[in-house]
Length: 598
Image (cartoon, rainbow, N blue to C red; front, side, top):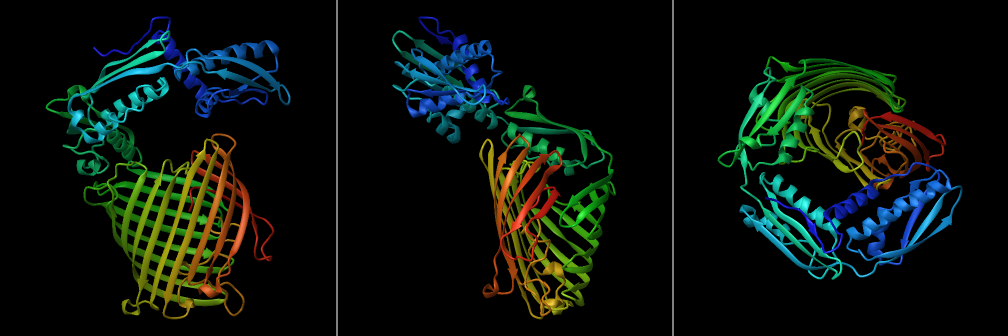
């Protein structure tokens, strides 16, 4: 029978030890919201222990009443005692003093004398079962973080013990359990012994996968969403990834992917996939706003089961102040990998911008492959090859032109964000190479490369930072006027240089108007400070421009402040940007948008 106790010659029962750990964890997670608070600070001990104790004593709201303060101080004394015991200091003593701050806030300073700690006398680790020969787990087991002669750290012990069991379960040892997990302690003699005996049990593989419901979709199609297959090592994490894939498919109203561990036999665990279909046809209506294109409305239609073969037809019509677009996209899945499919798209777009007007009819057909192992539900990595057709009628820098192009393109896209609706931690990269020749019937020869990426990270609970960049290079055999504006490079706009109007910057024609360039280089950095869980103040800096040659590269710069709300529909951004170069631009530009952008 598995056991988990703490024995002692005095009053150090398991209940007290676990109570201490519970109080410590509560201390780590507590937050203060009132303006008047009690702040706590520990002195008198070494830096490492001081940091741990200070984290266990966060500031707490205080209403200014003396009786209430005494009650809170008694509570914090107990919390401090529990924290000290959790880190092995059962003989600690302390004094406290209060320092009045502004208003009714106080700082309570604990001058702690740690005293003699409980030291580990012996550690008895035993690993039984097949995991004893599993290199990945054996390495972890041999790196037990506590050593003989060290101070007893019960927090580190509990965390390591729990994570080790989680790792075994994640690697298919579904019956793993501790046969003994016990700390014996003698407070009078200041020693403790640890007994940790783990039996991994058998390692299981994935057995039969039973798919129930969603009968309109072929079974081979549903299995594309699963990151497991019969014969793989059983992994709860892989089940979670599969469930996430199915939930994000926009095809199912209910999803459940579970391992039937009670039915495990012959080293295999059956998997049950239970689904309920959404209607195959969806209609969508949306309204939004972006400073770049103005107010916009979207009307969409999706059919996720064309020809009863899980093929997807998508039709969208977008009307904005500066752009109008109608298009359709058709995808039909192929192969066993999610995201691997044939593609066909067509669209008509009308743009009436300050810099240019453009009427373009585009179409393409091609193939997309998903690459990578797919074990991370947040990570997507694809390669797309298309044959493109574009017929455009445009006016740029007061010069009107028509062009016709047939050209291939190859695109690589990588994204790995913890949550795309809260893009605070992660990265993304998109790169495209495309080009054409008169031999294919195109207006002129060109070769074009473009790439964009961003990286974001959380620096601290209330701080985050990000970097982004866009680059591009274009070689064209004739004048740049032979290319439609979407194949040239412009700078300016909220996701480029927000201190400058949308696509308003770049090389100029002889009449002084912007005509776009052959190269692009724009970089940006930002720093965010969260004032609530979902709202942050952001400061940013951007630099770059579009240009025709390195010698002509004129670096534009802007700085700004903004507010970002990570709403249920994605980031909503309101920014004020000031251009540092080009005095013709307004002193401050307002940028507002909804959604995730590079």
